[in-house]
Amino acid sequence: MVSIEEALNAVLKNSKKISSETKLPLENCTNAILSQDIFSPINMPPFRQSAMDGYAVNAHEHLSYSLVGEVKAGDSHQPKINSGEAIRIFTGAPVPSSANAVVIQEEVEVKNGNIFLEKFPREKQNIRPAGEQVREGELALKKGSKLTPAEIGYLASLGLENIPIYKKPAIAIVTTGNELISAGETLTYGKIYESNSKMLKSALISLGFDKISLHTVKDSYEDTYHKLKDLIAENDLVLITGGVSVGDYDFVGQALKGLETKEIFYKVNQKPGKPLFFGKNGRTLIFGLPGNPAAALTCFYMYVYPSVQKMAGYDPLLKKVIATSSSHFVKKGDRPQFLKAIYKEGKVTVLEGQSSAMLQTFTLANALVKMDGDREEIKINDSLEVFLLPV
Image 1: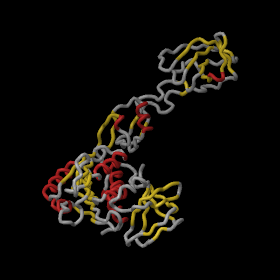
Image 2 (image 1 turned 180 degrees about the vertical axis):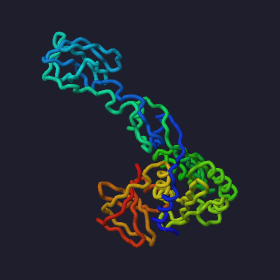
Image 3 (image 1 turned 30 degrees about the vertical axis):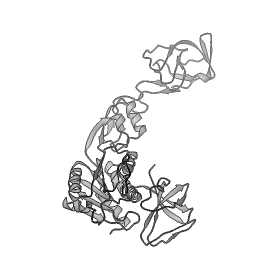
Image 4 (image 1 turned 60 degrees about the vertical axis):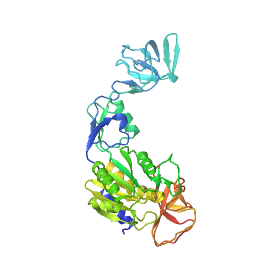
């Protein structure tokens, strides 16, 4: 059995960023990581552009101008403006080369085909120069950039369609147990509805992963062996819930051994989630998560999250803060414990209902409090180590 710190270090050491590349349509690249530098194919903006609704002028020594035309956003004509002349112009419209300033409409009076300014304009005021954001051929985004909505919009404004990115990991989720049935089936005596696969898939989707497949196996060595053999060959990460312990019908460990999976660790000195398995088979990482839902989700956030984040090239660790306790809690046993909690503005409240089988408390939580093994009690105003769950 390893400590929490040893387990996390082993996970981070063995989780490598996937280096294989692909190209995807820009709209499908949210949260992906760029695998190549992107150079701008155009000037952005591609022409001198009005930053305001107002009047483009060819400035002279007077405050009055003759109004001689109009240019809207999207117009392609470029009227010539002589000294002392102006045109009506709108935000985003191309500014004629003969204009040297744009005066906002609030500072202009219009009368009998002429405009009158409140003050003399400054050279190039309210004109966005061509290439102000980026010039043609310049570096637009560096390799390794994460494509958030801002980056997606930026690349779209450059007219880019297919983007070179690192592949995200392919992930298989396997649930085991003859007692499990699917939603919609009749709940007979001795059966329970399976929830772990949907829970884990939802957690992965919320983090931006989309290559996720769900699988079930019955409590049989042969079924478990053949299913895991196929999934290990096809995926970068395999998450297995249940069947990891040493019961007569827990076949996951036996099957993984039969497949010559390298055990990196089995069992972590923590509660919940002691029977956690982590191993490697070829290029594929394997987590054997506890079957109890709250224990499985705790292990997901503390170990699977950093692994899959690192594989995708993201920051691997949950945000950690020190917070002041707003509640009292007495721990049973001497194992370190992760406690479901609510964190807000520097204060944290440990919730009731910490059973490894109870998800209801997790629905209220936005954080996990780490309570060391030698600590028996949390008192109000104690300082606590808190891991913030991703939202």
